Amino acid sequence: MASLEMNIPHNLPPEEALKRIKNLLSGTKREHGDQVANLKENWNGHTGDFSFSARGFDISGTLTVTPSAIELRGKIPFAVSLFKGKITKMINEKATELLA
Image 1 (cartoon, rainbow, N blue to C red):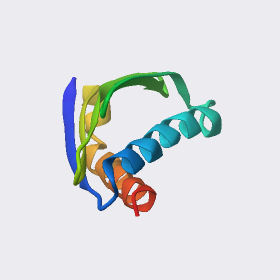
Image 2: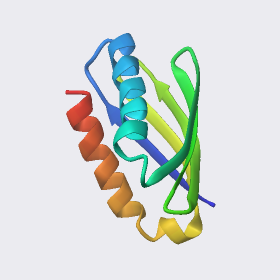
Image 3: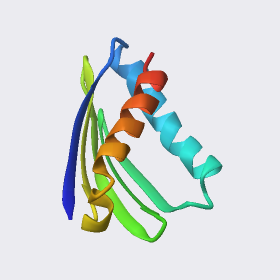
């Protein structure tokens, strides 16, 4: 497994950022259920563990909402790590839109 680590800045109150992140995960289940399976999340305060399968690849990690950023620490399969740059760019774009 390869690691994926990102810090995505935001200017929202932490509770609002947390709410938006949780809504994104539940929306992903509804909108992309044909591509994403076994999406699980477990929150303890401002930190949540997540896992899912996408196109047969298992992905897992931790999201932490801080007062100024969302910290993402994840594990992706080596085969997927070839697309790490594209994945990082997509996450940054979606997160910037979500946290605006």
